[in-house]
Length: 424
Image 1 (cartoon, one colour):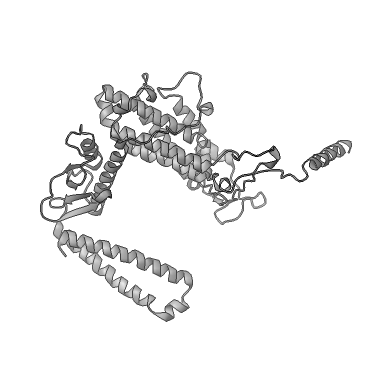
Image 2: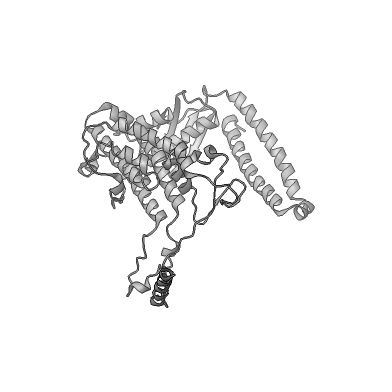
């Protein structure tokens, strides 16, 4: 009793010291963990998930990634205690992907000493290098914005007056956005684009290969730092194996990435347009079911800034390898062709003769268009019926209107394809 009285007295005295002062300047609210039926997880219901079981099955990193990537500000997260594999698949898949990316990049980067990025002159950078350095700066800025400031930054007269500004109150703590930015940079920008773009340079060796290697190690080092708060164990294991790693240092105590504060070089924008060309050619392949193994011929207009006469071949080799296409600046031959409109008024044209059976494709497109137009007539008639609109539930009517918008857009696309491929 004496001990209880002592601590109660201390708490009361402490309370008097804070009269008129807010006890906290920041209170963070998070959502609840719910089961597959939407019920709050609790001991009484017995619908909780044992974290140690998840760690045993899939690892702590996979569990952390699943939880953080689904942690929208104030949003509930759904976990199914009866299907842990499905629940934590997103974390398991990404951590596995990161480990595979790490092994691949470490193999490409080699184990020898690597030149610091600070010692690389800007003139030595190719367009892919300039682009990935720019994308790293973009990723760091986006991650910083998602995390938000660590504390109120407005200087005030006394510690008792700590307050967030109105702008600061709405910044940060978007952990799911932070996780998605870091994931997208590593999986998309780094693995899918930059590594594919520099494969040839790394294989050829020489000074340019060392430049690409330095950029690759620098980018991956910073990418691992961005991911480390969410995936501490796998990132640490990979970081320890980087050629730039110094003995006795740990990722857990390494500095947070900072932007270069240097304006992106023109080559970054040129590589972005190269990506646009590759994406357009891949889309044409998909639309006309052209097999990935089939090499195609494409004709571009207003692409002179990336396919220069004096170009070293970087643009040509990257587009040919990633899109399996040879791009010419000549006028396309007459006949059926697929077209893609790019930014700044540029276009890409792919003749379809020899790639697809034009007559068969036209018949298929016309049949699809006729069927869609028939369905659109029925849908427009239904939405034009005042009784249907008045009596049907609002969500049903709204769904039908969305369907009308989507089907109308698809009809316009089909009409354009029929006009281009079949001449009307």
